[in-house]
Image 1: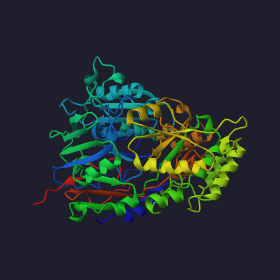
Image 2: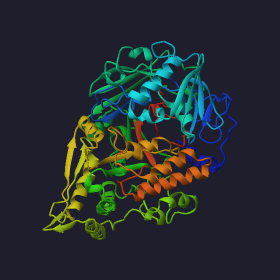
Image 3: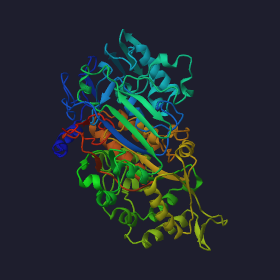
Image 4: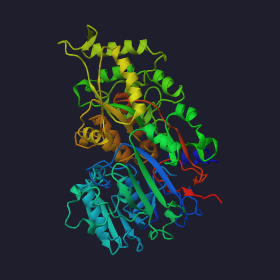
Length: 608
């Protein structure tokens, strides 16, 4: 299929080149809002540029998850929930376009209005908006949802609520939020909270609701129609969905009649289910497997088609995170030694034939990534006040260690030994130990079913043996894994943090000091850095794209040079295989395969 991705690169460059914020939207109800300037689509747009307004309705999408689930409420802290759930049953006042770095368009809200400095934002509900049970979505539902989610809901909602000074009904269908913090993103975040039905929770403690008895009633196109704990979840399109023919953002979307998530004990079983047709869509993250194992019968006959799709998202961070709360990893020299001992080039050759490029920083593969060499210009200006608190090479320039690709990795092991010695650890009778003879060891916690991850760790453990280090590798089921991660009860674990072209308040959740020790948080490495906090503050309060980009690049330097995670592969091309009756538009959004694309703009065409 033809892709317009590369044609669109020039437009993205123009978006990032904008230097002044637009204030024309202040005080005027608008159809959309952007972080900087105006949204791309005009008030009279008919559909998203990457949606097919003529797509037929019907068919099914069946995907596979590995592990288990014990809840179908993604909005509370309790339970292990299918990761897709909050994207399928949550609907908000505004919705995000995947074709722009950060623009929102009206969904439940027909308009948005902001103060001159975005110190407040006001939304007006569409009169047609209703929940799946036919009851109207009211301002009371909106206000209850924001307060309840912000105080009792999942931790992802608390940060925004903590910055709301007042929330008030400003009209029959309008609600206004006034903020107590200078933060341009808050006006956009206010439009992205899920709206729940207040009456569903009358007499019920929201925080303690059972994940199966209180499946949230929302206004979204899909409802949970069937499930079996740990086995599958099925969603059916609501035939009376309120947004059909009402919301331009929804035109040409949510065309599939049925969505089904099947659960499997491990990745091998999930792949076999795809090969025999029990599952009809699969993402492949291993290039070697993509090149060697997708020659099964359904591919040869054309029943299954393959596609490689580009995107311009940041790589994010995928790899193994070191918990700095653990005494073993509180010393940056030890973390640096762990990076030198991790023989990525050998692992990459063994698992992918050397075909998969490595993640080089948190925002690599994007205009927001740190640049090679010393920090210059605004990036240096932002970092210089913290020079005595941050790693020296955050300013002078840092790059990941590169091995010679051989199994022994002599240079890397030598460097690791020297770093461990600097930190007070030496090899004594074949065992890495401190001055008192206590051995250096740590626990790597993994979730069962993650075959490739365990293979990587097996190779890494062999490398660590050359340092006299024998870590404990503990594999637990998904429920135990969630409990341990939420309690930060690990020394090292697998880590995946997706990042976007519009980093904002979520950066506080990922690496902000204030929540570093809050149970169930997302700052798994335990970063507590005044410099990191300052860069997040800067990117949220920047008055130009130039400063915004510089602040993000500076943040990227701090995180990468901080040696908090051991990066593995980046996936700058998405590889998918699917039933040939499943289709998607030729025009790909800049975010590519991202929540909001699958299943949103896909459709099913039965063969005649």
